[in-house]
Amino acid sequence: MRKFLLLPLILIALSASSSEGYNSGTSSSAYAHFMMAVVYEDRGSLEDAYAEYLRVLEYDHENPTIYIKLALIDLKNNRIEKSVANLNKAGDYASSDIRIHFVLALIYSSIGKYDKAAGEYEKIVTIDPHDIMALASLADMYLLQKRVDDATAAYERLLEEEVDIPALRFNLGILYSKNGEIGKAIGQMEKVVELDPGFLQAYVTLGVFYEMDNNFNKAIEWYQRGLNIKPKDLKLLKILAQAYYKAGDIERAETTYKDLIQEFPQERGIYLDIAYFYIKNADYKSAEEALEKAEQENFNISEVYFLKGFLFFKLKKNGKAIDFFKKSLELRPKNAEAYFFLGAAYEEMDRWDLAVSSLKKAIEVDSKHADALNYLGYMYAEDGKSLEEAKLLIKKALEIEPDNGAYLDSMGWVYYKLGNYDRALEFLERAIEMKKDDSVVIEHLGDIYFKKGMLERALSQWQHAFQLSPEQEGLVEKIEKVRDKIGQ
Image (cartoon, rainbow, N blue to C red; front, top):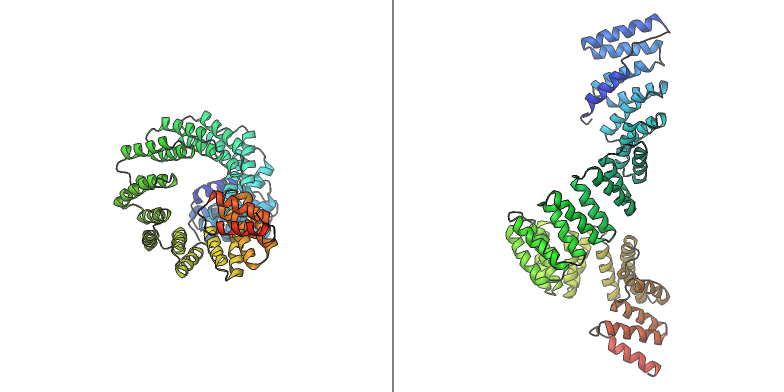
């Protein structure tokens, strides 16, 4: 049984709920046993007291006070299940006694039974709809169970009771954001700032909410206001730099990162953040320089090696990329992302078996790695073998991301290889909606039109693909072939 951390509080509550004198109209024997139990308790002979209280119940079995007394002794002896049973029995005979439900809720929450704790707080709120403590505790229990809608409703009821405190509105704002109600979330968080202008986390959270709303300039404004409260907050400065990047202000993002190096020369990990920034901005030369400095710091070195691998992969230097992915995996063997890119690098070097084994390892580490599922499935489709396995892999990827254009294209290509051109067309037409300017998807759609005898449509798609990627192999030959067929 886990240590009972709330025991002192619960004992006080129980003592208060059973402090009244015992009145029994049933028999003098019941009263005599009760008084003997009290004497034993005063002497510290709890088990003797317990036995006497049980004797009382032989004469007066519907008296809630006796069950509470028994529960109190059970708690003192850490007999949690018996205590709960006796409290429930007391509740059977005194269902409107809020204190019994309150103590039961405390016990349940302390042993991790949040659903039962919530049930007890719900009973209290039914008895007294204006019990603020019960409403607040009920909201907490809902949060612990991730019951977002119920927690939101509980917090809204607290506001109706005119309980207007920053922490309450802060939590409510977070809940609104989880439900995608960003406008309401922002409204609550702005109210938090009004109530407590020094609440730094509210400024940060407002920035995050505005980012969720794709209003990066407004997010930057709130991050800057947060920095007015705490000018040298490392975490906030990093978030601000990322917000500048998302807003398209690359220059200010870079300046902020450089300022971070000046302000926090001893802080390890900043060069790693800067490397991420340069990679996202496709400035691979600067990224490589930042990663060299990050490696010298010897901080989170597995991530440094992974990023070096990713950098060389993007630069088409797959031999170097593979070396660094392997180094990263030596330090962090459960990194599915490293296995995925290792597999991709092997595939680009036409090292089929190593590519397949690496991608399978990525899926073994993370069965929901959609990119790995799709990549391996597409490899099988391109090879024209294991097509049923390819279909299964890509199906799993689509279950994770149903509207991913690349995955839809892969599934269409599997059906194309299977000779089911109607089904292939269904997937490719959906894929093209998501990836209108992807030359590979456009070429695949042209291939299907060609197989279905829709030659002019095939020509149109292939010409479009050629305009986007004139270096794409085989397109010129396909275009000339279909022109000959239709006499152009």
